[in-house]
Amino acid sequence: MEQYLGGGMSEVYRARDTVIGRTVAIKILTEAGCADPDTKARFLQEARLAGNIEHENVISIYDFGEDDRQRPYMVMEFLRGEDLRHAIREGHLGDIQAKLRIALQIARALEHIHSLNIVHRDIKPENIHLSNSGAVKLMDFGIAKTQGFSMTRTGYVMGTPFYMAPEQVVGKNIGPAVDIYAFGVLFFELLAGVRPVAGETVERIFYSILNEPLDLQPLRDSAPQPVCDLIARSTAKDPAARPASFEAVVAEIEQILAGMTTPPPLAPPAPPAAAARPIAKKWMAVVLGIALLTAVAVLVKLLLTPNLPLTLKTPTGDMVLVPAGRFLFGKDKLSVTLPAFYIDKTEVTNAAYKEFCKETGHPLPPQFKEGQPDYPVVNVTIADARQFAPWAGKRLPTAQEWEKAARGVDGKTFPWGDRRDPTRANVTDNDSLGKHAIMRADSFPQGASPFGALNMVGNVWEFVDETVKPVPENVAYFSKHLDPPPGPQELWYETRGESFADDLTSEHYGGLWEEWVAPARWKSPIIGFRCVRDPHAGH
Image (cartoon, rainbow, N blue to C red; front, side):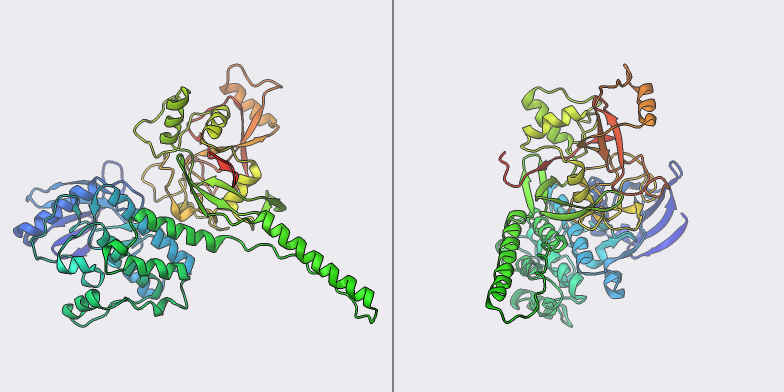
């Protein structure tokens, strides 16, 4: 034990894992807690439930058991930063987009635990932790329940009053919808800085929850209307009127965020100024010229920015829209115009690639990870990727498409901006990671690109459909690793985005415009791919 961190019925200490040297938190039930059967049962349930959850937005439980005094304990992930209550009070949350990204991570955590048939039942700011990099962790499963199991006695209400759903107040039909209600209340507080429900007594709070509509007025000037609508539906008195699941909530927030980060259409060029002349023919020429320019601008806008959904669901994973228009490309930030396209939100996963192999008879890659369906597929060649893409109704991205999806329109150095921040990506200089290896394809939402694509830096390199001429250093390297060595007629392709084995703070790393090249027959455990799709392409 290195430091006492606080506690009540249980005490929390900072400690060091002597086997692998990492800092951990240890939570130990006190003697008084052990003497209370309900408290002890809840402590053990928290350990069992949370210990079986693996998600980047849920606190990790490494181990649990009993000490030499028969007191239950948990060994947990040690979190740096602050809880959401403190962040709200101190104004540490940032702008509206930063707040929406926090809400999105909370919703993703709840989406995951609901997929495991776990209902948290105590969503509140104190149970949400924010790291210094903006990563969210859901904590405290002490009163959570699994489907078909409840430790709550009939008529005994559990939860924190301000965040309890009406059905939770009366103790009837408590299911996943109570977490959606509590999330709606939390979402309100995250944006407004105050709770939507007030009262001096528990009775007054419960009366308000059961009988009074939520007043959204404090949000009107600061939150977009779709956000207000989502909060209103999430906090509906009738559970059936709330969003059906956190999957739906996540999709709505993602769509709202994508809309806020989508650049406005480029303004048409201003018509040339015309000197005032009394001659009618010249005046008519100016009018007709302006009308023609306006018509052209409208036509261009219709052609380049059709009314497209921001998220596209496909059998092989969600895709996000990259709108039509200009962007800054490459090291020199050249202005390039592209039509609209969709790009996979994540790298192609083992699950999607396995389905492709099953349906087509294509061989699985070497060392294929059957037990990691949500991880990126690796050890594939670009030829393999090219066969997968049309099967999925997609294609591989060009270098320009990949880079626009990763950098946005204004040539960002990293998906999140121009500041080097390794904590936002799966890279070697991210000191918050316990180990450096491939992670889930949907990890690091805090490092999302302006259009919502994940892991476009770090995790695995990604093939793009772009041939390139190798430099002598490339040829020398692969001549040692390929048999036969690359010949003069061999095609070489770009990969983009770095991997978990690379770092962002190296003086050799310039930004998302950088590439690594490999022969077409090369396959590697650190190279995968993602696909793109044209807006009106069929499956």
